[in-house]
Image (cartoon, rainbow, N blue to C red):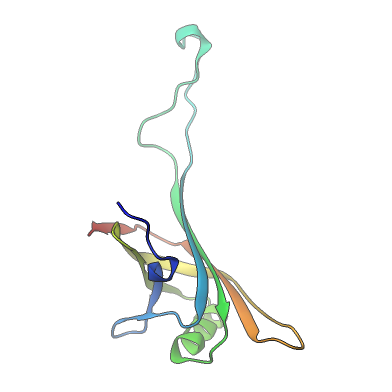
Amino acid sequence: MAAQKGKDLLVKIHDGMSYVTIAGLRTRRLAFNAETVDVTHAESAERWRELLDGAGIKRASVSGRGLFKDAASDALLRQTFFDGTVKSYELVIPDFGTVTGPFQITSFEFAGEHSGEVTYELSLESAGALTFAAI
């Protein structure tokens, strides 16, 4: 697989009718994590740790940073955060696939320098089962 453009990694929020790309994002990060369940016991082979297959909690986190553009997606993010609601998001990973599912906004920050633009940072945590569709 050839190198991919960072701008093609998209974070989209469902607005009730379709998925819309979150405006102004310059950097995006998607991380998948799975906790382990340790079932090591006195008779474990040579005292090597044993893990329970298929157990533990899986989660995904998304973060992004960008320019505040006061677009429709910005308003939707603000309202979603203040309402504390879980919405469906679509994460497009170029030449890899699409991850879709429920996320909750866990952090939404704004910043601005006197001689610069207003920026924001966004963090999302998965709030249910996610689906993956390969491209």
